[in-house]
Length: 345
Image (cartoon, rainbow, N blue to C red; front, side, top):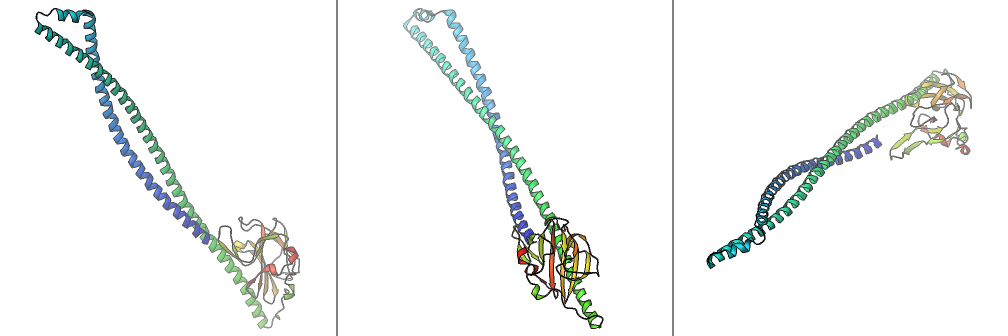
């Protein structure tokens, strides 16, 4: 649950970041909409100006064409004939002035036509640029909208994942607590019944077959390597797990043997422990063999040291095949590794 809380905190930060990105994208899309409206208006204005310039250039071109036609019809000496056919000096000056003004007007038309050509070309370039800008903005908007949709999907997926992880973790914690409580209650009830029977004089309290001299000398219940140790264990994701026993990794089907003589107090399923055998060794001492595939003994039977109890199985897919082994002395769990042969560790 501690690991889940850390994960949930990280996901909440991620969700907050996604919300900020969502808002930023929404603002960008809104800005792009406004830009598109403005650019569309500018394109329309430029198009209108272009059409006007083209109409004016067409009119000026027609006027010049008529003037050129008239000039070619009259011939190159027509202007000189007009001047020398004047009846007086005043008429000569007037005709010269008229021809001069006409020449200036034609020259102005040529310059105006050049200006219109340049303006039309510039406006065409501007129109193409604006159209490209509109297309780019539209493409930008589509990309931003797609990214926004992806962010929303990712946000929804993360929220669902957190909810599912929370549900699974709570259920797993409840199962672990229930199984551990059941195991503790079973051992407590076995010990209480043993003491009641002794009090009634039915049987004498037998000493434990597990003695202090056995520390570091007991045979391993199964050959393998440590999967987890007794006590508090820090996982790779910085979460902490508390184990009441040790995990010995071994292939499925490997034979599990009793570490000492005793009586089978329990043989059957035990929640998250899987198939479990509990041996009572006397004197309030018990050994627990969990995560079994098959059980080879029955409740109430006596076993000797090294007798097969069952085979290794898988109680938790995340841990793989292993034996969960505990030693209880007077009720509380102790570190089983301290009792096993050091050479086998």
